[in-house]
Image (cartoon, rainbow, N blue to C red; front, side, top):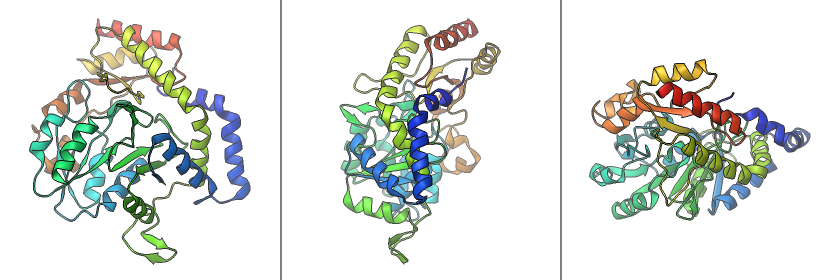
Length: 361
């Protein structure tokens, strides 16, 4: 059993993926080839935004969005401590200071009830993470942000395709930033990502930043990075888009079936006004190491997203006291992600559920 089954996905899409890759090999435009614009148009239409800017990775998507806001040294950006390091890393790289706000115990997403109290005179933006495939409380976050004149960047690395109150993830705030890392709900075969916005000025800034700040060839109007998504990776995502709607339906069905099979086991809650694309299917358990060992012995792979909250990481310890976010710290000790992909079979799912129940017993 595989934690994320990319081999079955490739087998199903082999003809389309191979043809798309061959087309790039034939025309030879490996950087900013025609597939880049084609993918950006398709993704913007899917998400429901005016602009999509493909970039080199989900990390670059966050960094470019923050750079487009023209942050100054000493500015603060509110975010969650329960995320991959890139969320806080890019804030620091953009010259700002991350301010960690604790998360909800049942969704692991940013706790909006704690947000406004964390806003200070140097706060310039909020970066909520749509963790495990479920969008955070973006309407409430946007309302608070508007009241204080702040930008909102949705870190949607795990939630592309998710629906929140009738709208798609990445189309809910100033910027939406996602990742096409291979294990994501929509992934390429290397690194890749995208930024989404309906703001013309910010879209232009992002496009310039991703090519070293160029507004025209050899005319550098702002600081930038080498942040382009290469043509081959765009071709792979274009091929995978062919069955993405089906994969989203499958993920929803598998998630619902997990919930039934694991009734009585503490699981991440999905709010009734949104869905999840289940980038991970995550439960909360005590004695996690023993549970993982028992599952491994039964042939069931697992992962932990994430074992150490960011404010306990050496690189970010200076930005918060160790006891600042107790819910995140507790979740980090208890979360356990189970095998999840659109091609997960019912038989494998039954094996996972039975093994987990035995381990917990």
